[in-house]
Image (cartoon, rainbow, N blue to C red; front, side, top):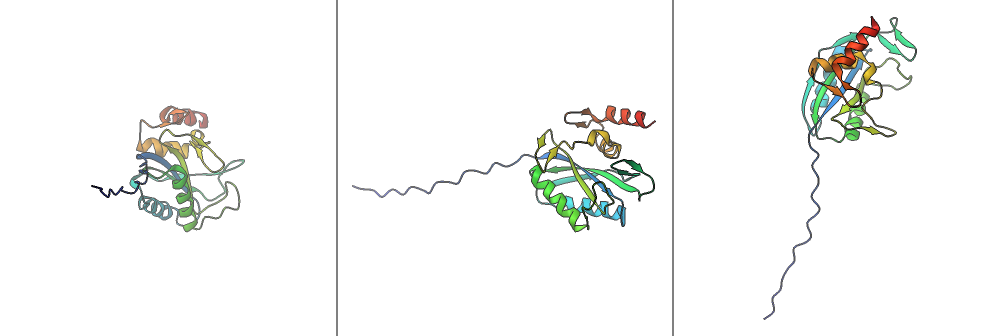
Length: 178
């Protein structure tokens, strides 16, 4: 008695599903309808695939910052921060943020120059990365009140990986600014 046994084809390896992480995204705009741009970009990010939630801080007006320091004669910025719950990998999320900047007419002519929209990935959970295109946490985040204050507004217990809790960082920066 012979039997024909059929062996099912090998199953493809299961794809690892990335767990949700909280990403911190900083927004800035000093050209055009700044408020509408920030709010529109936040709505656009909230509609990205694998983004489950987005909380946007209030909008903060700040003086433009140039390579050589604050420039009160330049158009002022509107800044905000969003906390985003996502399963997108950090490098993919950053690429999508750059695409949204492009949708809003971002031109990269001058470092720290005027812009219609600037989106920075500040932190992604507790992850750290230092590649040619991705730096986590953002290397200057601990020095930026226009990032830390809106972030603290959304999460009073927030901590910047490698720098610690946000509240004392904000207090130190405010004291230094006098």
